[in-house]
Length: 318
Ligand code: 173
Image (cartoon, rainbow, N blue to C red; front, side):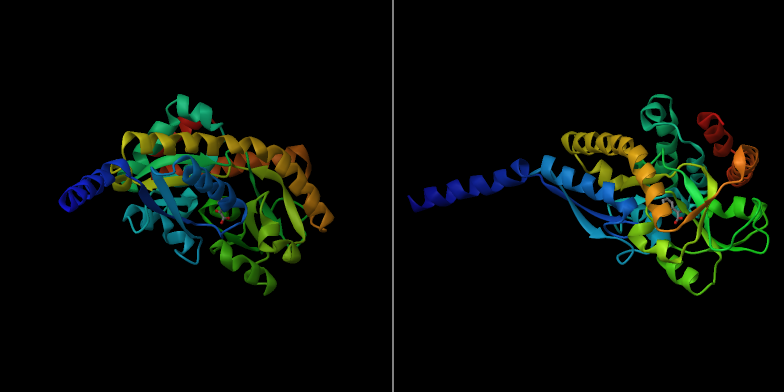
């Protein structure tokens, strides 16, 4: 009887690994926890953890306190983490053409059906040892914010905080670019180390930057891209059901971009209410700026990535 019981227990135990194949993935974000460019990724994690009970669990380690923003790409490449929420601008050292992703603002549905996703996924497989699971915020543009008033679109004499997103255009218009991660922007503004900064239209209130910002230059330009990457070995170690769950959640995450039109309108109003004044130089100046901004950015991407740059440009269609 006793033996029987033990034998029964052994069967249950040996059946466990097959029945309970819950896998845990460690994830980080290159943006601060709870702020605009982490928030949808955090919703994605909640969804995976609830839809994927018993199958997959994402252990969210957090934001830049866990891994510095410009090192997140390398952390997912080397499997220090299994998953990351990170903009291509933060891993151009490993993949120069990542700087071109901001030049494609087509909806992800289209990018997935016209071969763009596949091409960018191959680049991630090869250079970042990772799967390109999702891209967020295709419809959210960037701006240059300033503390000194300008009377035309010319940054001569201005020091402007950049990442690779804004560096070429700031330089082309005479500004002095200073690269910093987001976590250093507030202090740089407060101390007058910089006269302005690049950032998307959304998110400055999460960081308190409205307290140290006077102007927002028009027009908006480029497209935000924040990607969810999964280390390729972690990805391959998953079974079909686990991969399907992540893919379904990724499509859901990309769909959240549809919330952004209303959010951007509200954000513009909130900036105006906080005393941030829009500097608008009219349609001709806006067009000249945009032409220049795209031109210098493509040139820079193509110079650094002579093979994949032109292909990215053809896929972006601009
Ligand atoms: O300004 C930045 O730090 C930056 O490059 C970026 C990219 C995507 C979303 C938010 C900021």
